Length: 273
Image 1 (cartoon, rainbow, N blue to C red):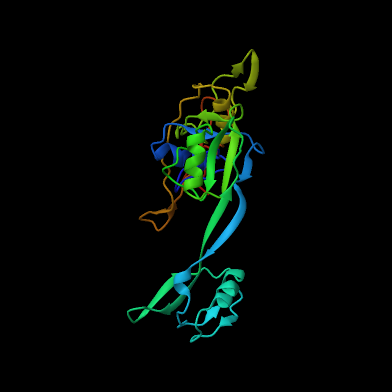
Image 2: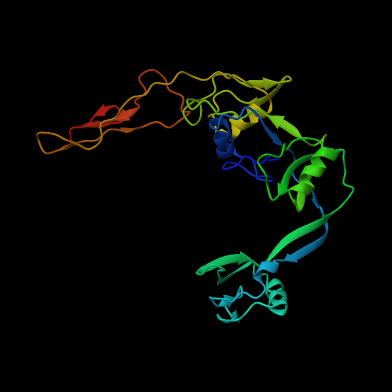
């Protein structure tokens, strides 16, 4: 995938049948994709700045501050100083709970992350993703000064680009549910004079995917008939009626070929015991 679809697909995700179904039923008319290993990830930040929250200075911590390994960094009751803030930033503690100015408690951020962005990035590329991701950014557009300014205003850290030659678009599709696993080809499928699927072959999912890739829209299959079978039904003589098939998919049948075994039958012959 070369497009982020919230709740359905993300950049770099491998396209498969289930994903195509989700995109199709979401109502999306087309989606962007590309080959693997062509994404170009760029870190826009030349410098990362952790700007201290001065509003924390002089406040008293009301809950123990724990590190990522659940070890106590500062006990409750400590007053926040510049030295304490430096240690909080070093430990990547994003917020602490302190006494409120009007009583009670409040959770305040320790710092705000700001980036000094690069001035030059490739402008002959298509923007397909960013970190963080913003739904109001027009992904799929070529990088321009306006788009680059928007990325910097939103404090975007990383972007993913792809060249115009590598970006492709496709329409999502859903296979005809009547084809898969229940049919046999009634004629050989040719493309450019070369056979790609022989007559009498069972229609498989892999075969259908290959047809779609080769822009084959229709195929000929044999007509199918569904015959319901009675399974494990009790009779008045306390016996069981249990019918089961004698043939498999793609078997060639002739006139009078038995296809079902039932009560008092053995491959079409009367079996009285």
